[in-house]
Length: 98
Image (cartoon, rainbow, N blue to C red; front, side, top):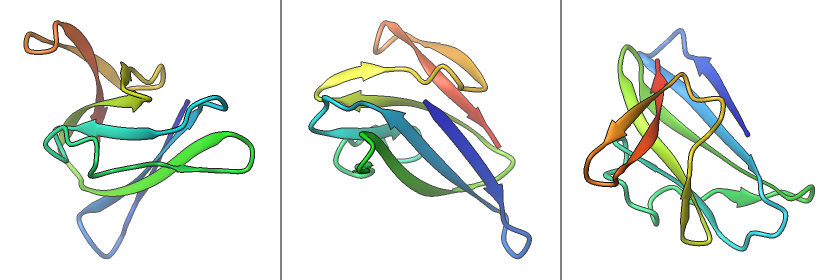
């Protein structure tokens, strides 16, 4: 799992690239507070090496909760900046600080 942050000088935006190795998976998405937890909104594209990857533009100076949805199962990124307990999900979400 990997998260890459690229801050833009011209805009108050950070390009965040999410990458998740899931060779056996058919479908991977990233969901979070930035896309209303919609699994259809941010699908990751499967690369030839079996990694799923996608980039999202997020407003900087904010924190966002997120998780991956891998073939219907929610998982956290071990490289999240921190973790936040979520009562609704009865689980921890990863937190991204920009």
